[in-house]
Image (tube, rainbow, N blue to C red):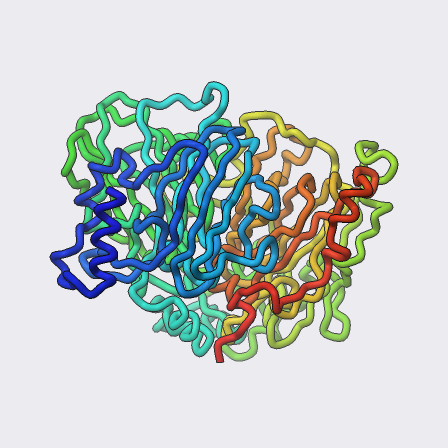
Length: 640
């Protein structure tokens, strides 16, 4: 299949057989490539080639950037602990890279240009080598430019070296995507020129409660659920649209494992299988105590493994609906090939609330001028009606346009718990607020951020069936590190939606001077506050988050994730054990948000007590200084 696909691709590239009939649609070759519908590579040595090629999406010829000529890229499968070699050849005319999302690899192998390595130049081959102490479902994608939006992503399955605690009879990988026929750089330029230009869910009627006027005064919209909608995107599963009907076969009574990966560039999906309960058994590649549910929301880059057990010999629909309900993609799980499940109609578009703005009126204890019955007029000067003295928020006092005061670059190592006795009793948790400039890049600060881990996500609170929340998740295995954190680092998610500016702590990545620092061996509480009205899937490379669930702070089975969605107006905490020395990317996984500047670097500094003279000699003199000229990202440059 690889040779035939390569032949077709090269022929099209040479100008031959440019007619549509010359292309083999993805669904037509699925059966020959195994039950995944994706080319599969197994073993310990892998050859990957990044190139441009023609493909067919939803009946239209498209130009893609991908690996080995397929979308998704080939499934890479190996065993936990194996020594892996991956030779990645770049045949593009621009730099490329591959990041192994969620894999605990040495930082030099992490694949982020300008942070962990220079990138792969045109015509060059870079060899990744690593062995990872983990198993489960993961994925890989480009970290160069906007190539991920053009198809540069693929799945990874790491089989456990011992018995798998999850039993199943057959499995399928389902990679969710949002395909665009428009060049991704044109999309970004449009967003920079007019952030609402690709959002076709804007409100067109007045709101009887006057809330639309309040959103307008805050330079927001209650319909800002997605920057790019189904008007631009074709939603796909393993490269197949609903029309292609990607179908999976089962025998009644089987336990079918679905490995679901959200590989979209910008789309959060609501996943459900009407009439068929799903039991979540893994989150982000790590086993969890089984939780049965009917629907869950997936942030970009999140991974969920579920077990379904259909007993009836009939087709079931697998539905991935965009968070703004502007579109969906439907696949079929059926007892026979070729059957098609009935696609559900799109549901009503949800609307953001005051809680999503960071002002939860139900807990505000009464605010002057904030009576929200139908007669309240809030269209004039809503911000002037707020008595901030009664809000009780803990985000620090405003002073000269700044909030709080934190120097990420100068941690107090004496308070980190990694001195003479790094495993000794925890020190008192020192709260360190972020330093935020309230200005062009920050137009809103959440007055009353709240923990929302017990909420299923925007639009799912009022559905008539069970929905999954983060607070329901528990790690199957006991947490390896149960120490209390020695300090807290607070990071604010900030934006100016009108100007399409996205950042951490009000500073976009191209203007960051120094990295956030952890010390090897320390336990850190990372608290994130979302001052925007959009959900952000946040990913920290090189380590997992232990999610701090209210009421379960002292639990020994905290769920562990590599990506977590921070909801609008939310304040959540995760505990991190800084085990792996190096520089690690930390960013929102919405690709255009990262591209616009919502990114930072976390430097895990070596513990001097563990360093040999030779190791110290080989370490860079200073991890903290950012030299953006060497990073090779075009998210350093704003579109004019």
